[in-house]
Image (spheres, rainbow, N blue to C red):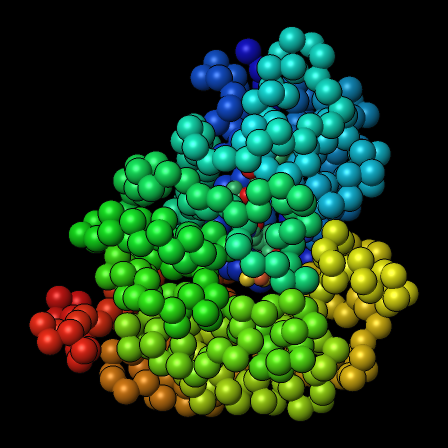
Length: 469
Ligand code: B12
Ligand code: SF4
């Protein structure tokens, strides 16, 4: 029997006044719960997530496994060092370890590069037999025949959205600033579960709401189409992410809406063709962003638009243009990022070569801080413009303006509550988190998402509100 502790450390910001507890109480540590499935029933496994609980570090289990992102790397190393001093075997894995293994090696007994589904069970076997290796790299990548995620180890009540899941890994595209190619390297970088396995995973999840954390849920149209077909009639409401192009192509998005898709994270990133070209986000080139928005809205799907500031062809006006466009097109929520060259990406390599990286403090790689020499804008202009964009987009004036841009009352109200609720009720969220009641708000989210639904009439072309909701 093994005693195992699995830890997801929080980023440094957890101790700063900018900490938004609600943002970090959304999703449970899915990667660790996925890997926990490879231990046996006799093993005593615990998952601790510093985003939602205080870590207890005074124990001495047989094995400590830590998940390392760029922003939590230093804290992860600190925790690892503490356990190693006590003689505990420490395994580190995750995106940051994969991209900078030599840095992580100084703090680990065992390292994992890439996804863990093949390498981790191999390691457990070696560990039990008393000869754990130093580095494990996935020999193959697949989501077939993987054991069910250990959701029993997730403290569901601490999360707003406990039903997060991934049915694919990676993405078919290759944007220079994205973590994806750095994590998957030369191997397979986009693969899916079998549709039946994905549907079985969904069936295992209680309640109505699902959040697919896949990078691009529509990335494999055949898989997605069969998945949505299988989900029809399940009565689920779900949220996910996809590209602008996938919303415009074919009728996959209609199938997703019929299966219960109610909100989509959409990577607009930039309006500038030069920026798209220079960051290899070619799938967005010449795509009609407004048409994608219209199509989603006509299906009752809310939009979380993702935008990046600080690409080399941006100018001082980019913030105003982006915010105005979002409000004018009634984007439900917007996520703005300061361009961040994550280690291992082509963007990082290029900037490193050009001497443009000005900070190697990974805790600053939080998409809110300028860590490189800018072009076209000064670092101050970029930071100020980014802060301004958030303030302006989420001002009550603009929340109302964007909400009332919809052509029907249900969507107007849903927009108002969703956007206002997410950004304007911080003390309320803090209260619910503090009193362990966060999960009780999930039915409210489910109702809100369900209320946006629109259905095709028998004639097919015309859309109307679903009377059931
Ligand atoms: C959900 C999510 C969040 C959630 C919660 C994170 C959580 N609870 O896990 C929230 C909203 C809190 C969040 C916040 C942020 N996130 Co985030 N997030 C994600 C997202 C969309 C999904 C993560 C996930 O669950 N994947 C599915 C699981 C199954 O995969 P996995 O976690 O990678 O685990 C596998 C492997 O990595 C490996 N593995 C992982 N850990 C370990 C450990 C061991 C010991 C072993 C053996 C193997 C192993 O095996 C697992 C199974 O294959 C990813 C994008 C992505 N596709 O990964 C971004 C992502 C991880 N986030 C990112 C960033 C930048 C952030 C923020 C800084 C953003 C911000 N501006 O606020 C913050 C800070 C995060 C932090 N803690 O430091 C980046 C990280 C880049 C990097 N190189 O590290 C990503 C890749 C998105 C991106 N923009 O490119 N995030
Ligand atoms: S489309 Fe999105 S997930 Fe895919 S490579 Fe580009 S940024 Fe990454």
